Amino acid sequence: MKLVILSGAVCAGKTTVVRELMKKTERYFHLSYDSLKWQFSQYSSGKYRKEILALRLAMLRSLCEMKYNVITESTHASTRQAHIDIAREYGYEVLEINLEADYDVLLRRCEERNAVVELKKVVSRKRFDEVFRLYESEKNVSALTFRTDSQSIQEILESILKLL
Image 1 (cartoon, rainbow, N blue to C red):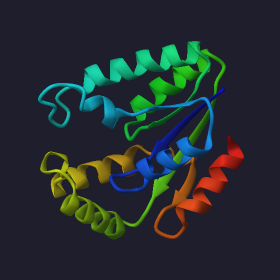
Image 2: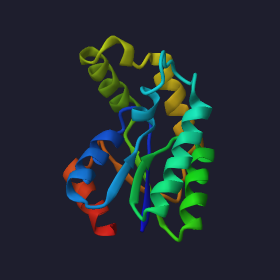
Image 3: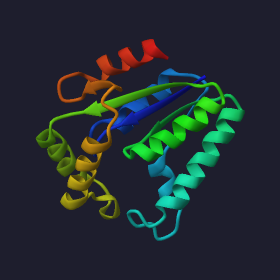
């Protein structure tokens, strides 16, 4: 069984890669922070972070008990480690993947996304910069790294699928 953790800054391609992986794999569950956060009423950035983490870890434990492969995203080193610890308790193989692109490319993607999404989901420039700095400071430098500004999603997917 596998735990796949995708890390990256805002607009690095995590959601796109997960969506495509889910189409091409069987018995994988996408354990998504973003999906869970919108299940809390009046969600605002960070307001329910501890509760969402506890829920994610409980869900991961249940998924491991059911022997599902799991794909998730993480920017925080402590969150990644908590997921890894649970997965290893159950004998899972852990695959950490960084998705990266130059700051200017990520910012342009974020601005383009903000122009077309619902107002409540817009990422402010301040938040964008916070997450970019957080990712850069807490990423696992030994993780497999793909550049979404120089590699196509198809190339990245093919490489990841070979590892699964």
